[in-house]
Amino acid sequence: MTVIQDILIVILAGYMTIDQNGPVVLSWFSVIVGMISGLIMGDMNTGLVIGGTFQLMSLGVAALGGASAPNYGLATIIGTFIAVRTGTGTDAALAVGLPVGLLAIQLEVVVRIVNNFVAHKMQNDNNAGKWGRMNREAWLGPAICSLQTVIPTIIVVCFGANVVNFILKFIPEWVTNGLSIAAGMLPVVGIGMLMRYMPVKKFLPFILIGFVLSAYLNVPVLGIAIVGFAAAFWYFTTELRKSDATEVATVAANTVTEEMGDDFDE
Image (cartoon, rainbow, N blue to C red; front, top):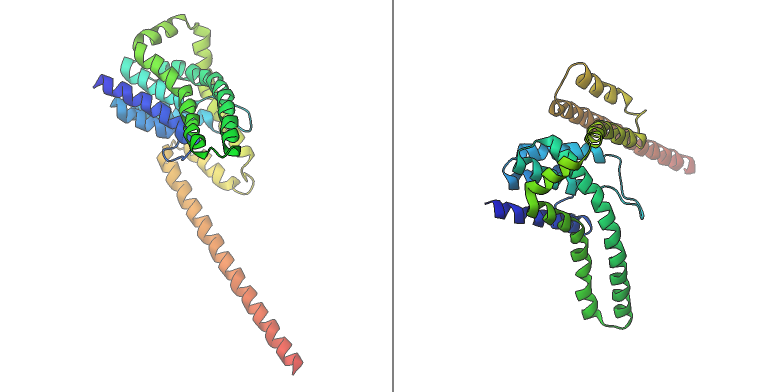
């Protein structure tokens, strides 16, 4: 069973990257891969907790243009694997998963450089009319992309708790403390960046209601989500009725104008 879990975790890490750069069927979001990792490891609750934590860290963070962002999906997979396999809990998952996610940035840069040569080779074959060879070379791109997550996952899976204990042993305490502080700050920064590009002034009453429910009434996240859905549904139906009323008024005004024009012609 352990071997099967190891293989499935490696496959998930590789497919996550291929899916992110291609069909986007599974989704590479931390909360999704965290749930799947938890299912594979037999502890979905831990996977959801770790995935949700990394998902909050990634809010407002995007790899735009040539920039690279930490691979929070890989951090979630590694963190869930470590937390369940070693029984060290979410603290070790954050302490090990986040550095692996940061390491993936360097591997992503290498992958982009290598795939650049693959793209030029495909372009040359296309210009030469060698489309069969070009199609075969196209499979190299996703395969190379998957290596940026497969390689770190294989290392962690193969050496297991020994690597984790080695890393935790030699990581200074101030680093782990810093990661714990960052784990608490990054969700706030991510939400702040997300709100920067949202129509906050327009929906400020709803934001304040959610804050009061969470901070003062201690309503669970699910309860706040239900209230948010109700508010969104109310807003949508209200705006829809306003739009229908405006459309009816416009049609009526056009009809009256046309009738007055006909009377004037007569």
